[in-house]
Length: 96
Image 1 (cartoon, helix red, strand yellow):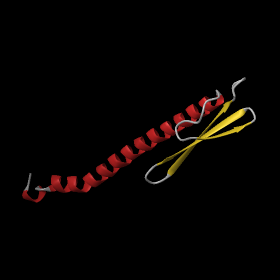
Image 2: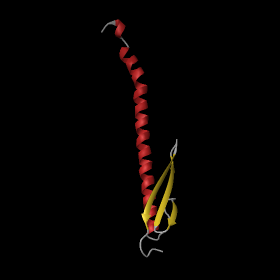
Image 3: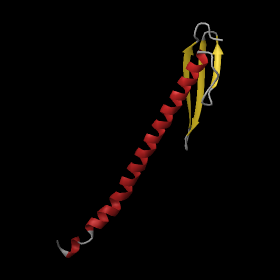
Image 4: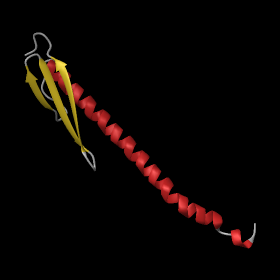
C-alpha cells in the first residue's frame, strides 16, 4: 500500500455509510407499516365478526349494520399517514 492510498478505506466507508443507514431505516419503517396494517385488518375483521354474531363493536371500530351485512371500519395512524381498514361479514341467522 502506497502513501497515497492511506485512508481510502475510511473515505469509502464515510461515503457508503449514509446509504446503508438509509436502507436500514427504510426497511424498518416498511416492516413497522406492514405490522400496523396487519393489526388494523385483524381488528376490523374481529369487529365485523363480533357484530355479525350479535356482540358490540370492539377495537375502536365503527360498525355499520345494513340489512344482512355488517361492515366494520378501523382507523390506525402512522407517523406519515392514516390507515383505514374495512371488513364485511354476513349477519348470523337469529342474531339480535
